[in-house]
Image (cartoon, rainbow, N blue to C red; front, top):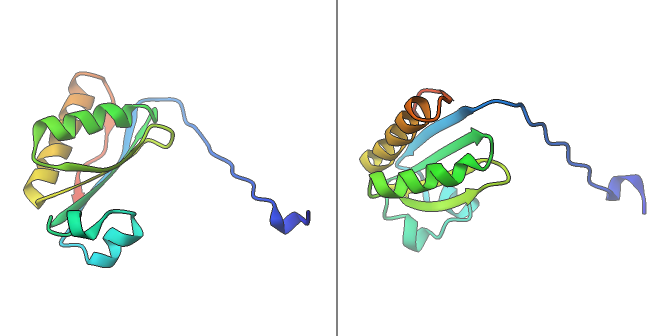
Length: 119
């Protein structure tokens, strides 16, 4: 096997408790849904995609639970191995989910939280 046939993945883990990204994409195009692996037939009627990352990675499961319980947002993807959460819904439901997540993580779990951003 030649050297260019081998893939090497290096993943860094920084100890701590931190929300590193909390972003809302309002009115995304259908192509973005497809590229993210979301089903446009199911998710495209929604008007926002929320992208969230957290350290430690397993915390994404807690964030997904809070998102579902605090708003009408739906889980598009959650990965406890990378700390990634993608949610879909109306802009207001995605924003409500992220605000509830940030509030819980900051005030109950003592995480450092970034601001919710939107494009």
